[in-house]
Image (tube, rainbow, N blue to C red):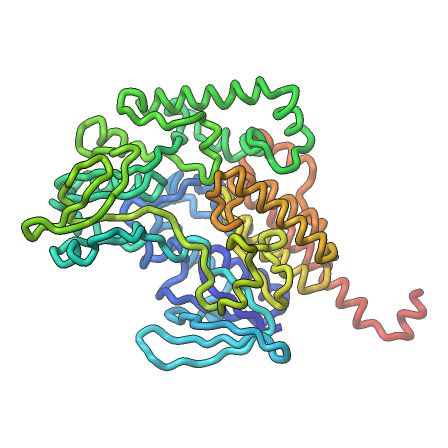
Length: 509
């Protein structure tokens, strides 16, 4: 089939590689000038690096280079993805600097994409039998609609998202406000804090952070990137040892959580800095698990950077020709640059409103079976709409699920059953994350559950012994590299059967 893929990040590239392996004619549209998605040079902020260590953040048959550090930089991840595209001969299938303006479904022809090359007003159309949306759930940043922005900018102030701030020298000698307390905000603040005249982190709510190395010794991957770490948090359907952890063994589980909270509080000196978050450490897995940016806490202790907790920007303005910001604690502070790490909009801008209405429920949540398959829109798949610890592997397995579905290898439940399944999941996700479930795309921390569910449906999961090892050791993407080969073997066997003549089939029967 002719398959169009929108986006060239982890999800788009792994989809292109897997689907081309299964004989499809694939083209990837990417509006940036390079591959990488969130790791593109057009979106990297100073201080960007992975949350996962390199041993758990790669695609199954292409490990990261040994020369990379434990937590690769944003530039290194982009270079890894560019090397992946070269290695699997994907560049000839990728159209960079090409934005998809619209994608419309023609019942007879398939998907009609209207695309435009960067710097040009000319548009062209592309026809595809199937469409894979891999534009990323972190593709369009959200910036709060502050009052007084026009006066603020007229006085020389800059308002931008973390993904739009690329040059650290812009902050040199300036007064900088960083909005938010997630990973991107803390990373940017730590980088800016070394060069700015003043740096303030405006944190409406403090989040629990996980040190990269517990007690400065044990890599956090042995706690949070294992099935045991995932099992500390109750899933929608607990099974096996998870039933023990959230039943008779609840005391053991609670003791482990309290121990992590105590270690994080002491190691990051949160009480001394006045930065102990509300609630218990359980909340670290509410909507995202954020690693600590150790340099930020060191700067706060030195007085270089301030964290204004339970505080917001109430407005922007100018005073005596200089940009300023008004804070909800009553202060008016100089603000040459305001950098917002305030989340992203989960949008599909190239779809019409009527089509988006078919994809979402009344609250705007994506209704996708297995985070991949729309309930009522044909010839359409989503890849990468399962944000997790193991996002590269989750996207790759989703691509494999798509390939299997196109082969007719998946017997989907009836529509009514799928609808009930999706709605039940969305209600649970919304409650578990206190509404911060990214329109139903956030599955953190249940990475392995999601991967298991996809592969079990394909009858391609790893062995029970491998899954047992993953209870104590971090899952390796290479554990799953045979899944593609096994499905390809199934495909070849199916084609061999189909190529047999009727007389041969009768004889064989």
